[in-house]
Image 1 (cartoon, rainbow, N blue to C red):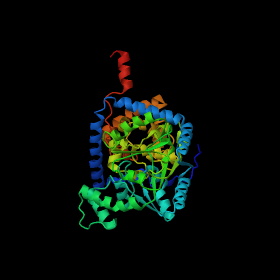
Image 2: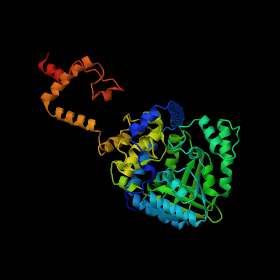
Image 3: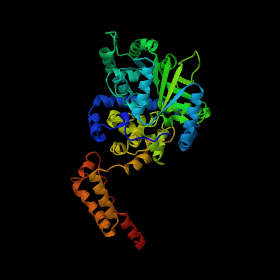
Image 4: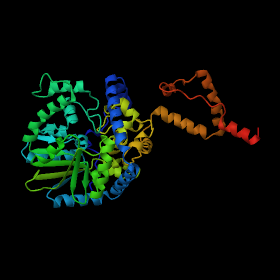
Length: 470
């Protein structure tokens, strides 16, 4: 398995500190309304269908165990996958970083004589900035997933793992279509069915006249070399079956050992992500089948920092992620700030622990702090990734704000000196004078929360009274 180079991480680097971007998002009432409506709807649907499964917790435990086993023997499984794909008529390429992956895909498209590709929704291709690389090479990428198409036409960025255009409402989508979509009906309404029909007409010519498609993969079965893509619309299936050449870009952590393992994840993923009992479209392909589907099948195995994450025994559980977005839908921070504030392809709680590890903590130093540590993400994760544990783990390896570092050093010194600690306890009575706010520079902490009132009696006072028998 290749060793990751520090360069060429693609679109993962944070553009500005999370606190700065979050404040701007918090001031956007329309954005917050869109997010609140969308996440609450998905939460309700997901909760209902999960409640139907009596062994949901057991399924989560099995999914977590499969992922842990996969990470423990990842090089072996990747070699098995490569052998199986090759035996089935496919070609496997190894990409150390985003630059190498983009070069491989661009060269393959050029070799096919194509100047346009159609794309299945893929986080991996967003991660490496493939669309930008293709455009720089004179190749036009066309997103076929409806939400991704909205983002592309709006010259926007995705803000959610599952629903990239979650920050847009239907009136905004209508305006984007009227402004950017060639040949659209000028009387287009903002009814969902009308918007979907306009997108369908727009994409039909692409499906029928594009010779190369690019996809990601939800899973790859090492046992057989089978790749899997799950989706809700069917556009992905058109891309996976109609073109002459299919190029799949897949993060190396997406491999699973056996067909039986795939059955576990096909139960977990739809209920946790879209609130469906099963995915409407589950497409599976193994290499090349003469006369049926693409006759040139390529698999690009992408590292791009994953080997470094794998080396961290605590941090590697972030690689267990199956991209369901359940953690985003329950996170109070994400619901108020949206995905753009995270400055990374991977937003929300999983992005706060995955992105800093893929690029190095100094590139995303504020992301591990983009959480209240409430634990809702851990409860929702279908493969039991302990995101709060990872956040604390990463905070220990990222630069702390100077004020916080100073305060923690002062607290440690105080707690290490009993007489000073006792004096500090007595000093808490001053809060009766200052009310529920702290004086500068500590007032930043109390601008958005109340300072708890001191207890009427300290533990030491209670203990002294208890020991004296009074």
